[in-house]
Image (cartoon, rainbow, N blue to C red):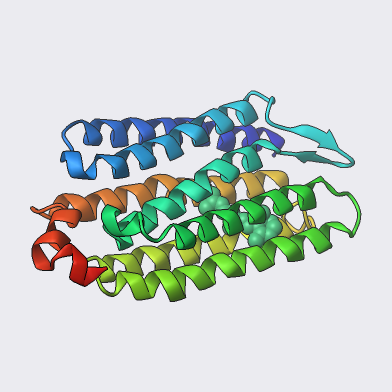
Length: 242
Ligand code: RET
């Protein structure tokens, strides 16, 4: 059974590497006004490739009490989850508006980084004190979701990607909510599921939340003949929109 755990980590390496390559190739002929979306999605899958490689090679984990602690999950998430949120925010808002919403963007990124760092501290504990950190991390997660579904959704509603934003935010919410549940069921929590089942669920979630989520965004963008920023500039004057 344990050998399957390693198999799932290699599926992560290959899946992320293939995802990164596809996104890179699609980015080669991307419209210059949309290139940053490809760059973000590419960096996310590249970071995941490296972290999955470290885990598959046995370098991204250490023995902790009776379990193996995969610290590389957190070195992945601490970089990739903020980038995923910024990518989503740049679907909601044209870049020239996003520049003026730094408070919201920094708030999202800060709450998200806080969530991953406190989640990392939770995973490091071998006694029940981990649930204190877990609760703190969950509080930050709720803050992220509140910002996505209140402030950012309200902003998105003023722009042409309102519908795409809702779909993507819905996809993100459904996938991200699964992580703290898996964490609780996994050896990090109650050990209700084995290490290999945990590795399997995480790799499915990670591939969908990174490569799948990136490709859906790219698909939306490629369907539009006029890039988002230009659509907004054409529709209204910059001053009336701000
Ligand atoms: C932890 C445990 C502590 C409580 C909470 C968590 C949330 C983790 C999340 C991770 C998302 C990861 C993604 C990865 C890449 O694609 C740290 C599991 C709330 C939401 C999207």
